[in-house]
Image (cartoon, rainbow, N blue to C red; front, side, top):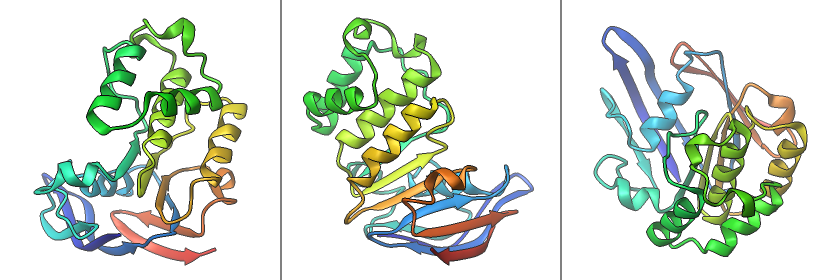
Length: 212
């Protein structure tokens, strides 16, 4: 579902990705690991069409993330490491996601409840003013409600307490079939029960790619 062919990405003289090639297939659940600066987030942003590669190409369901980004994003759920500075209230955010992506409000509310995010007293609050944990729970609820073919999580549990982490992985286990799930993580012990592939990156290259 995702093909990465000889990708090189530079920022000035710094090489973030160096001729990287790999394929993520349906039913792959991948832990993408490596030190800070290894190229993990750059790879994710190329898949999402945020960056243009210097050379090589990416294909997501056969489409170009740059030229066909809108079509690709319809099939992708993405939770970034740092929540975006959204100024909408939770009520407005849920309404926007529902109208723009066709996600049912009830589904978002269901997964928010499963993540133990108490929506009712917070619906008029700006997403921007919420705690880090509440923001992450909201973004996770939206990602699960979207029922995407491709699910990408960049350090999704960094702001979550242990119970919320357990809830997140419990919910993911029910939604793994016929999808690509990609987890950028430093906590392999958290995802080892749900991943079937571990990729290690260093200095912009893939140094190991193992089935587990």
